[in-house]
Amino acid sequence: MSTYVSPIYLLHGTTGEPVPGELRDVIGETELEHWEDHWIPYLHEKLRDMKGRGVPREEWPQHRHWDWRSKAADVEMMLAQRGFAVRCEGMTQGLLVVDLVQDCRLESQRGKPLVYLEYVEAAPWNQPRLQNPPKYRGVGSVLVAAAVSLSLEEGFAGRIGLHSLRQADAFYSGHCGMTELGRDAEKQNLMYFEMTPEQAQAFLHKGD
Image 1 (cartoon, rainbow, N blue to C red):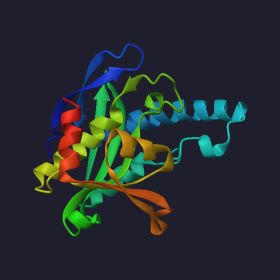
Image 2: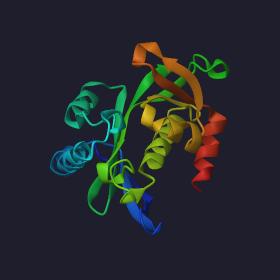
Image 3: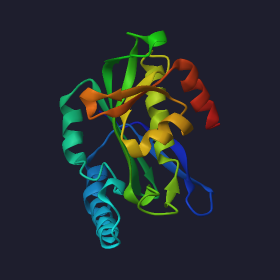
């Protein structure tokens, strides 16, 4: 199956200038090699620094244990899952896995299909918790926009949903304008968010 590549822009973390990149609808071997050869060593270096400075573990990145090679293998096995990657200047800057078989919980949309974001992660140098200022800004926004666009393509009207790690709650509620539906005891007490068709349009227009 061929890879679809769409042009996107990230923002340089220091200057704020737009930097051209691409959104790819696959997590392939190149992306996994970038994760193994660049993301992991950088993350471990930053974690050693945080440990040395006595930063409490609850402030460390909550997705630091994620294994993207395993997640990519799951995507290959599951027809209802899709993977996406953001590249910029030759390097993978973010990864996303979505699921297409879940329904809305929000009362006004209850039972309607949505695109569920299983895993979203920016490269560690793009995470302000690890590098401030980050190398690039906007990776998370590009990946959420990819999920919304897929929802529109699938006839789901832009509806998306996800369980957020606590460190990302403010991003989804504030920046993305999603609706909080409370903490889910069956999902490690993570906050569950959904985006309605109206919120999806507002989010996409925000990036114009």
